Image 1 (cartoon, rainbow, N blue to C red):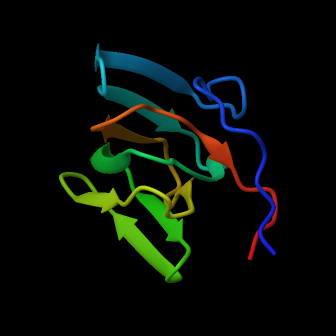
Image 2 (image 1 turned 120 degrees about the vertical axis):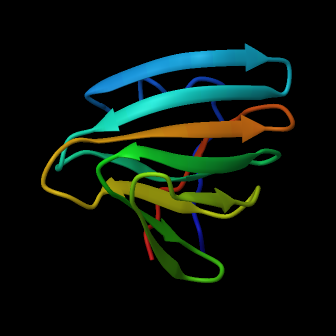
Length: 118
């Protein structure tokens, strides 16, 4: 059985990144930029109502997904969308920092940590 923690509206305190910037935020939509070192990750989580769309600016990221299980690798200029409710983990897939945009919407943002990894 999957165990999930309570939903939060701001997840920035839950994991460490090299750099985090918010480029736009409107009701129901936002664009953030994250930079991960080769050892950092965005932990397993999902969003109840919004889609995460990843766009890599530099470096490489790897997105692990559940239901169905999938492993996606992205390089500069590549994009991938994660549907609402689908658990995912984001890691740096390279030896240098990775920088990417996350477009989140349309809907109310939440971050639901997944505490039981599969």
